[in-house]
Length: 161
Image 1 (cartoon, rainbow, N blue to C red):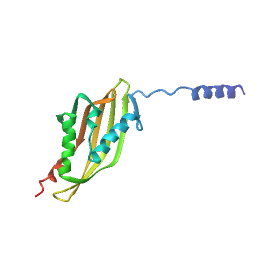
Image 2 (image 1 turned 120 degrees about the horizontal axis):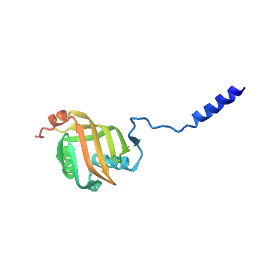
Image 3 (image 1 turned 120 degrees about the vertical axis):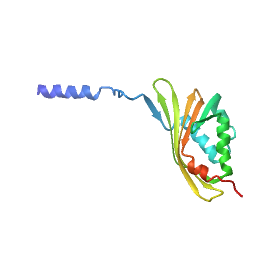
């Protein structure tokens, strides 16, 4: 009978033990946070064809990279909106957005989606998986990077006659 009490006490102590963070875990991820919502709003503004005021998302001196081409966020927005000259019916399919809070203090919001549009010149429906990350400096973004394969997108951008 004494053994049953000892085993019961051991089980209670083991079950009350606090959860230990795994050795390779370096932070936590949020999906319904303010920063993720702001990036979703940025993507929604693009889809609505109205990026008015979206420059306010970025710090002064923020850097944007689109497929390794460095530019300002304003130039990035202008380039993205310029694509509407060549494409209709633009969509972000299967979008997912989450904010990564790293233990050392850096915060990134990542967004993934399948970009889709119909070429005005060829009529082809072009699709592309896109990954973007936004590095936060307080409540503003100081760096943004978009990565996608632009080959089919560019191939279907020929000038309309």
